[in-house]
Amino acid sequence: MKPFLDKDFLLSNSVAQRLYHEHAAVQPILDYHCHLSPKDIAENRRFKNLHEIWLEGDHYKWRAMRANGVSERYITGDATPDEKFLAWARTVPYTLRNPLYHWTHLELQRYFGITDLLEEASAPSVWDRANTALAADLTTHGILKRFGVEVVCTTDDPTDDLRHHRTIARSNLRTLVFPAFRPDKALAIGTAEFIAWVGKLSAAAQVDIRDLNSLLDALRKRHDEFHSLGCRLSDHGLDHCFSAPCSEQIANTIFAKALQSKVISDEEHSQFAAFMMLFFARLDAEREWTKQLHLGALRNVNSAARQAIGADSGYDTVGDFPQIAALAAYLDLLAQENALPRMILYNNNPRDTFAFATLIGSFQSGHEPGKIQYGSAWWFLDQKEGITEQINALSNVGLLSRLIGMVTDSRSFMSYPRHEYFRRILCDLIGKDVERGELPNDPALLTRLLEDVCYRNARNYLKLPQAK
Image (tube, rainbow, N blue to C red):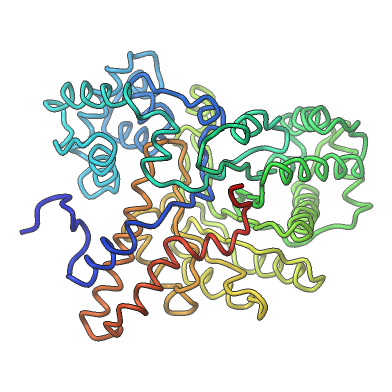
């Protein structure tokens, strides 16, 4: 019987162990999609306690605590930080076979050297030891250094002023930190939030937005500003892709209605969103950016909870949206006009795994390896089974060797062991294939695969600015 979470955790044979320890584990981290706070990095935030760094914004843990019958007071309410941590510690033993059990104990080991199983009895000791470590060298900069994080790409709205990114760029932080352009709110036409967002965009770009042309001008200016600070990725979180764009004249009419607070029909919303998605793709292609599409989440489904707690608080689910026809049409429209940028496609519904893996093969370029990427397992699929299925699907119908690896997609500075988790699973899959005689036990061939997927492919593909 193997001990829990030893050095060969998830590594079932000697080939997997050698590949992980000698090659995968030592690769730097390129965290090209996350939701970390640029402010926290700019200020080199020092966390006061384990709750701040670990539980303050982690909706994965919040969902588990609610499922365990924990009162909201101890999740997002007014309980003290130590009371909230104790509520989480009491929940952890009930997360067996949930990836949270693995992540929790990986994080305690890698950040604090704590090997105790977290439960109510061990909670006071874990709390004290972790808080002591946080008071020493585990600032945001210290964490990035410890985990060999070479690049971080945050997620930023076009209206963000980017002042924290300017501060980081002037600092002596060795990790490169860049914004990523996330214009989701540009598609929310017909809502009160959209009108407020247009006002913020007007101020940020210093453009008087009166019609569609001035809206597009403001977005171009912000795109340029992001580029000047090293941004080379955009991102969209959509339930499904929009592929039936209207003409510029019709889009202008729809936008004018929205500015007058008139009702926008579902058809008009879809037409305008499709028009804007083509506009954003053309901007990215012109600048040689990489576009990310995160597709398939059904968000904020509990309206009572959203009203009481706010959006993005852990009340989301896998969406049952048709994906492939619209997504293929969108890619085809861009390919027809030679405006298809590098693109990473992420699915949230496991039903779509093989469809996404096959779709990317229909839009590859003979000039750039892996131009269209099937992105790493995302959100509800970011667990052992989901990671394995994503790797297997890509291996069967595409080129695993061109995959650009893992991202944290996290708001927590405690999430870097997710890269380790992915790398261990990948090495074990390859090791098992070798053990069964399905892959050659060729160290050079296997080493190249592992180092490429864990690091080099992303470094080469993303074309991010290099350190000076």
